[in-house]
Amino acid sequence: MTRKNTCCWFLVLVMVGAGLCRLPSRRQSANRPDHGSGQAPVAAAVVSDIQVAAAVATPEEPVADPSPGKRTAFELVLDGDSVKLLRTDELQGDFHRRRGQLAWWPGMLYFRLLDTQQRVVAEETMAAPERTCAVIAAATPGTAPTPPPAAMASAHVPGVLQVRLPSVVSATQLQVYRITGERPADTNAELPAKLLETLTIQR
Image 1 (cartoon, rainbow, N blue to C red):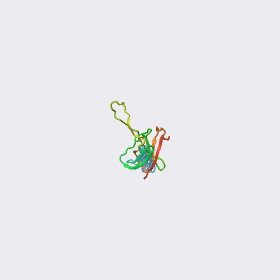
Image 2 (cartoon, one colour; image 1 turned 30 degrees about the vertical axis):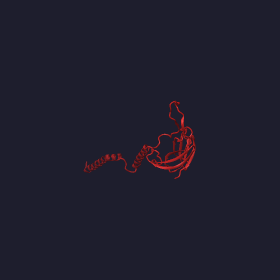
Image 3 (cartoon, rainbow, N blue to C red; image 1 turned 180 degrees about the vertical axis):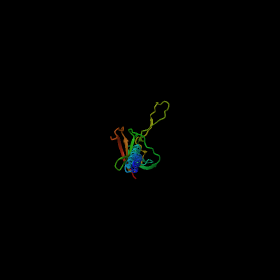
Image 4 (tube, rainbow, N blue to C red; image 1 turned 90 degrees about the horizontal axis):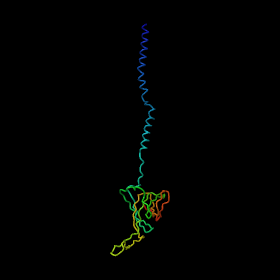
């Protein structure tokens, strides 16, 4: 073999060795994630999934009173079925939200606030103050076990009452009802109540 042929074979071996050395680096680069334009959608998708999961896990915010720390006290005069508004006072304090449904039985008074669109924005019930009351005379020797009443209060004596309702700026009217029957199970049914008075609220 001549000197020239020996040099040619040596160059071929050097080139083959250089190619073999580059193979591992190419394999590593192929396995690495692309840092170009293909990575942005993946990151955006991950962020989107996190936001959706957070939104699903967040509980629904409870509906709060228009002014949780305020109440409007309506002082009324009730004379039979006649109702007059004496005054209103704005109260501030730690008022707790009612739990459960309104108390409801025949004979009670039912109050509700209406806004300019005649929507009910607040409601309350309370016992009527003008109930008949018997004062029993003291038992004396020789009388019956149950002595007759000595006096009877009139059912039509005017009574002063105060009802506290949430302070709603949009409220324009206070309606006063007398409950006449059981509350229906259907919320859309007409309430068994007699309208006594519709009072205009002065601001």
